[in-house]
Amino acid sequence: MSMRYLSASVAAAVDKELMSTQAFSLDQLMELAGLSVAEAVLKVQPLEKGSKVLVLAGPGNNGGDGLVAARHLSLWGYSLSYYYPRKSRHEHLIRLETQLKNLGIPEISTAAEVAAALSGPSKVNHVIDALFGFSFKPPMRPPFDEILRLLQESQDSVPITAVDIPSSWDVDQGPLEGNTYAPEVLVSLTGPKPAAKFFKGRHFVGGRFISKDFAAKWDFDIPPYIGGEQVVEVTEKEKL
Amino acid sequence: MSMRYLSASVAAAVDKELMSTQAFSLDQLMELAGLSVAEAVLKVQPLEKGSKVLVLAGPGNNGGDGLVAARHLSLWGYSLSYYYPRKSRHEHLIRLETQLKNLGIPEISTAAEVAAALSGPSKVNHVIDALFGFSFKPPMRPPFDEILRLLQESQDSVPITAVDIPSSWDVDQGPLEGNTYAPEVLVSLTGPKPAAKFFKGRHFVGGRFISKDFAAKWDFDIPPYIGGEQVVEVTEKEKL
Image (cartoon, chains in turn brown, orange):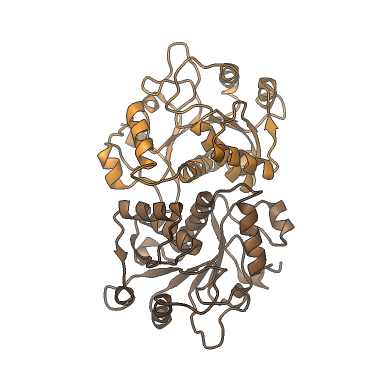
C-alpha cells in the first residue's frame, strides 16, 4: 500500500471542512491532535527513559497542539516545561496555557534558557517541536530562527518529536538547501504532508477524527490504528 | 486506600470550577469524558465479543458524553446506533450529533425501536446509558421512564455501561426503593459519586483532566491511571 499525502492546499481545505461541514470545534480537534502527539511521545520516550520534556510552542495552531500535548504528558507523570514566546490571542489558546500554569508547569521565556535546557548535565530528555505546521512560509523570524539553530545543534543528543512537519521544512519540498534540521520523530496530523517523504526517522500519524468517506473524498488514507489508540506508527512497508 | 466520593453539590462545584478557574471549555471536557467512556467499553466489550453498540443519550451533558463515546467507538470499528429523543440546543451538542450523522451512524427515534434493539436475534451487544448524570432529580419523565423500564427488562441479556451514575439512581443514595436497575459497568467521571457505593459491577473512573492539587482541594483522589489511558478500572481493594 503506497502512502498518500496531503499537499498544503489540500490540508488547508481539509482543516476548513473539518470545522464547517464536519462540525468539529477547534477545541475538539486540538485536544485530539495534541493527545495523539502525547501518545507518540509516550511510545518513543517512555517514562523510564527519562521524563523531562520541553515543549516549544509556536504562535499558531501547531503551538496549540503542543500545549495540549504538554498537559497530557504532565498528567501522565512527565516533568514538563514550555517555551511560548509569541502567544496567540485566540481564547482557546489562552485557556490551554492557563491549564498548563494550573498544573504548575514552568514556562521558560528566553532563547538562552532554551539553550540551557538543551545542553549540560541536567538537560531535558525530549523536545516537542510545535513551532510551525503546514502553513509555515519562510523565512523563520526571530526568535524562532535562533531556536531552530539550537535544535539543529542539539538534535544528536536530545531527541525531538516534530508536530505535523519539522519546523522550517517546506510543506511540499521538505528541507530546503542547507537545512540540516532532522528530528527523530514526526507525528503527521490527519495525514502526512509531502514533506514527510523526506523524513528519515520514526513516523506516526495521529488526529483520529476522520471518517473513511471523508478521507476518500480528499484522496488520502486512514492509517491502520490499533484499538482505541490515537496515533499509529507508519511502517517502512507502508512508506513504499 | 479508601475511596473518596464527590457529593452532588461538590461535583457541581467541581464542574463549575473546571470551566472557570481551571479554564477548560465544555468541548474539551466532553471530548475527554466521552473518550474515557469509549475506552471503558473497548475494555469490557472488545470488538470480538460483538460490535453492535446502542447509545442512549439524554438531554444534558451526560448525553453529550455519550455522543462523543459513540463517535470514537464508530471510528474504532464498532457498529453504532443512537437514541437521542430530547435534543439539546447547545451549539456543541448540535455539532456532536452532526459528527455522528457524518459517520453514517443511524439514529433510532422511538421507544419501540429501542425495545427492538434490546431483544431478539439481532439485538445489540452493548448499551451505553448516557441518559442522566449526577444532577438528575426524579421523577423520570417520558419517554425516559419507558426506556428505563426496557433497560431493566434487558439488563440480564444485554450488558450496559452507565455514564457517571446509573440513570434513575439518586446521586447520594443510589437506587431508591423498588428500583432494580443495575448496569454491568459504571464509568465515574472525574471521581465517583456516593451512588457508586451501591454499585456491584465493574467500576471505572475516567475524565483525566484533574491535577493532584485540584483533587486535594476538593477532597477526592486521582485514580491510579496507567500510561496514557483515559480510564482505569477501580479494583475491590480500592473500594474497601
